[in-house]
Length: 223
Image (cartoon, rainbow, N blue to C red):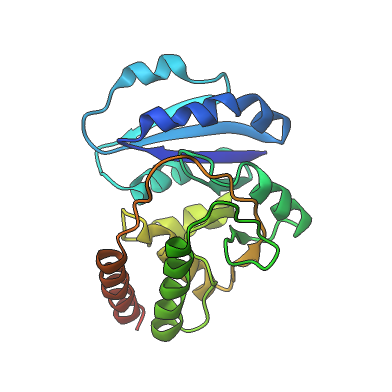
């Protein structure tokens, strides 16, 4: 059984896509969907909207990483899928994960040569490449895409997540890096990007500076 972890905060309205896909998720072997609200101003009324295989979790800590953390710790499935509130790849990441033989950890990677990215902006492609170069320089060998979905054995995720300090998007990078240091190197698998209308949240200057700062701090910590 798989556990799908879906963090959300201000984007609760985007969960409709997950609600509509809940029956398909169950048919594909996803036994539970954990909707992980992260941050203050929690509205428990959303519980009435959940599908039968959904469960609502909450932490006052804001950040997608905080949502991932509580989801991992509460997961009951043998494998965890760390996704997003808009299911950016549908279930193509799970399909590819199965084809790859369910390795200890995999990334639904936008940088995989067989990945399909219709509607994916040039800016976001550029940011993926820039982020990889920063990590490659400061951390050594690293997956080309660290911000795709993560598919991971639950026991491995639980063991490593307690050592991850970030509560924001950098949680994924720390998790992947620490798994690699523990001998579980992430395998990148192809996905099909399913765009959702709306502006990109990418801020090229701010995000680049933050990536360099956080990656440098992780490098120093691992030394």
